[in-house]
Each structure stands twice: as structure tokens, then as C-alpha cells.
Image 1 (cartoon, rainbow, N blue to C red):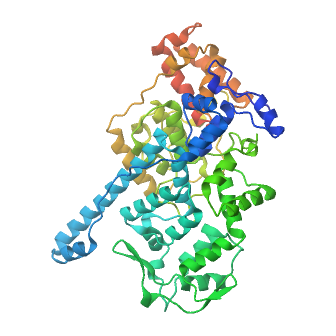
Image 2: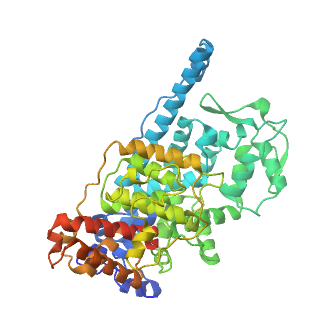
Image 3: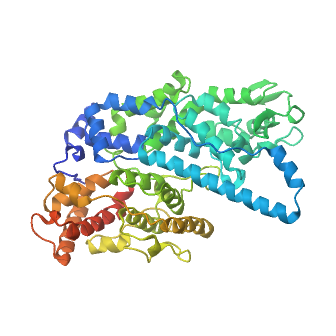
Length: 551
């Protein structure tokens, strides 16, 4: 089906038809369409000015800028308690005092976690090293650990810093580092992996989820590898191998026999043909939103192996690959909750409290540091249900200043169906069928929703309001006519295309809204009091559409 894109004065929002023809010929036209695509996939979206700058830089220069990474990232400091001193002090307290001290420490853990996650999301919003943070988030979903099991904020923060240090570096080095990480060893029970009773959890997930994938190892390989990691643990914040708990006997893993230890097993995994293929597949699917064809997967797997698992050359090749910009990939990936909220924020150029995005993403099912299970978050269609689509629309309305948190923070509801201007109701007003997205219609677990809603309630008391002026932006861009306004806002807010029928319905909706408000004339944008509320409602509707969930 033919699709339409904005055709108004801002060149940065133009997507030239020649781009698709160039791709079919094996060449890549570097224009706003392809630059926005790269911004969406290698970062978290961008405002028009940043897309325009990327186009002016040129593809190679912009990719080099993304890959350059920071010279140094100043991360927040949180002092670690001296555990031996803490244990001594706790022994001296009465039971009641000990209970209060435990409560105080729990509050400190929660406050530390909230503060760090706000810092992390703020970096995403500001566009500070976007690819670095994009890959930090990717590794958080690949090497999954959860605060629910680790129960130590500083260990989870240390793991996040580990991902950031290795985000664009060597997967080999990252793999060895994560096998010594306190949060990982705790999460996958390797802290209780002893010679006399080997625990297989870490070894199993190491093979299935981190390196090889199902079908590329045997149960006996798991059992033998678990013996190699016996005694690997953290004590008082320091990694060590407890010799009395380590099995130093002969083992056979993936056809290799010897007195193997954990490092030997890690190197054996990296030697397997399945390992670069598995990692290449994960990276390609993450950035493209589609399973790669077999030949392309093999090509990128060979690239990983040829560069000894270096991530930066892999991403450079991908971002310069014309196939990365093929029509079936452009604007078709279902955005994860955090990408949706951060991307909307960046496209609008607003600065909401970072905690609102952290907990908004949690309400939508992506609670940072709390993945649902060892496999991490499912992606693609799993992100969209009838309830979550409604919640996305309302959170977009909050960012636009159209929906008050008070309107829909009701823990007793299964979704947010009765709050704000619902996406489906608005679509009905515009003459469109309401989209429910894919996947089963299921509400989030009550406990998780309650936690997220409680945080958002506390944020409501801050009285934040979005500071932007859509009427002024469109007026400066020389936008006129209802079609021009719809194209302008769609180009600003969407990562993909509008269907022609949807575009026509939006134009009709805008005309009806102007008529109801008594706002007319060719210069109606000059009347901000009349035009701004209409434009924000239109923007809210656009972000609530199924197309608004794609990048």
C-alpha cells in the first residue's frame, strides 16, 4: 500500500522518494528519512534539528560520531557500606533497633536505585552518547539480572556500569567480566555453586541465553560447565574463587577434556561457531526489528569472529549497510516502552522529570533493573496489548500536557481505560477504527502497577508542565493548511509512515476540531490560545495511533 510522508517546508522532515530507489539499486541516499531511522535505532529518536545536523554531516561522519563514544562518563557515586562493620553494629542493637535499621537500609537502597535510574534515563533524554546508552540498555536485557533477586542496589548499579564500560568494546572481555559480576553470580545462584553440590543455573543460562542458544550444547555440557564455575562468588564486594568449594577435577565440555575452570569454559564457548552467529542474530534483530536472512546472519557472524568479537566494527558495518535502511525495516519496529517515552520526549524537546519516564516505562511493562525473568523482556508484538496501548496514549498525553496524572492514576483499574482522552475513542472521533495492537490483552501484575502508580503520584506533586509551543514551531516553519499541519506533526512525532486513509482521517479530525472551537482562517496558527490546545490534542491522537508505536 502506498504511504505518505510530510511534505512541508522543513527539509529535515522530508523523506525523498529517491531514497527507496537508491536502496533497491544497492546504494543509499542519505536524507532525513534514513538519518531519522539511524537516530531511532542507534539512539532514542531526535528532534528535527538533530536530524538536520546528521544529514548535513553525512552518513559516514555521523556514524563515526555515534561510534566514537565518550572520553569519560562521570557516573554518580554511592558509598558502599562496610559489611563487616555493619554486621558488628547490628549485633549490638536490640531487636526493635535492628528492625528500624533494616527499614532504614531498605529505604536507602530504594532511594539509591531511583536516583541512579533517573540519572541513566536523563542521559538518554539529553542525547549524551546515545549509542553508548542504547548498547548499555541492550546488554542489560541480554545479561539479565534483577533487583528482585539480587536485592542490592549498589551491585545492580555496578553491573550497569560494567555494561557501559564494555558497551561498544569487546564481547569477549564483557563475557569474562560478567562471569565475575556480583549481581550476576547472585542472580543465577552461583554463590551457592559448590564442589559437593554443583548448581547448574549460571552454566545453563551462560550457554542458552548469553552465548550459544538452544540446541548447540548438551545437558552433559551444562553439568560439566557448572563444575568449572564452582567456588566463583563475591565476598564483601570482591570477586574470588573459594578453593575449598571449587572442583578442580577433570571435566569434558563441548568436546574438550581437562581440568577446566570457568575461564576455560568461557573461551570454549567463544570458540564455537554458534557463538558469533547467536550474538550477531541478537544484535541484528535488536537494531532492525526483523529476523535476518541466513546469508546475512552468516556474513555478520563472520565479521564478529574476524574482529575477535569487537562490537564497534560490527555496528559500523551495520549502520553503513544499505540493507539496514531497506523499506521493510524503516519505521516498522514496535518500540519498547522506554524508547517510546524517551523518543517522544526528545522529539518534542521537553524535559520531564526523569523519574516520570522510569516509572512510566515500568507501568508499561519495562521496569529497569526488574526484568520479568532470566530471558529478559520480550520485544516486538509482546509490548502491545489493548491495555498497554491505552496506557501509552495516556502517558503520551501526560508528556504533551493533555492528560493529568490525577486523571488516570487509579490502582483499582486493570488498565487506564477510563482515563484521559483514550486512544481508541479519539481514533473513533477521527473516523478511524481503534487499533488494539498485537498480543494478548492482559493487565500488568497488580503489585508492579501499584508501585509504578505510586511513584507517578509522587511526581504529580512536583507540578511539572511541558514547555513547548507547537503553534510557534509550525508558524516558524511556514506550515499552512490542515494537510500541512497533519504532515508536520506526523513528521515530528512518528518514526514511520502514515497510511493514506489515516492521514485523511486526521485531516478531517483537525477540521472538525477547529470548527468546534471556532478557529478558522489561513492564519489560525497565529492565535495560540485557540490553536495550541487543538494541536496538542492532534499530537496526542497521533502518538496514540498504532503508527505511533513504531520507529
